[in-house]
Image (cartoon, rainbow, N blue to C red):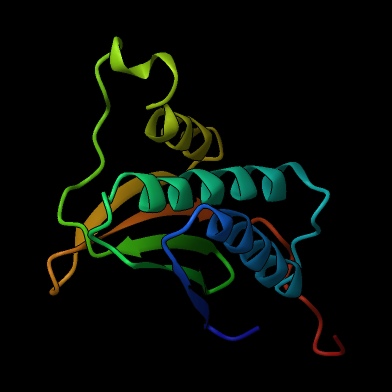
Length: 146
C-alpha cells in the first residue's frame, strides 16, 4: 500500500448529507481493507455521523457545505476530518442544555479514546475549522494482487 492515501468529499450542510458522509467513509475504508462488519468500522461510522451532524446543526447556516477528509498514513494511522467554514470550535454544552442533544463531542471523545486515538481541532485560513480524529490502523496491508 502507498505511504499515504486520501479521499475527500464535499457535501451540502443538510441533514441528508450526514448519511451520505457515513456511507462515503465506510466505502473508502472498505476499499482500504476494513470490513464493514467490524467493531472498528461501526465505531468510525458513528464518529463520522456525529462529526457531520455537528457540521450541519451547529454552524447556524454560516457554512453552506462541509468536507470530509479520510487519510491513511503509512498503514498505521487513520485520520478523519470534517471541515466547515464556521469559526467557532466545538464545545461541551452545560448539562441543562444537554437534555435532548449536545452529547456529540462527548460521544466522539469517548469512542476515539476507546480505540486508542485522539480528537483535535485545527483552524483553517478561511476562518473555519477542521475537527479531526486520529485512530491507529490495525487492518493488515492488502496484498498487491487486490
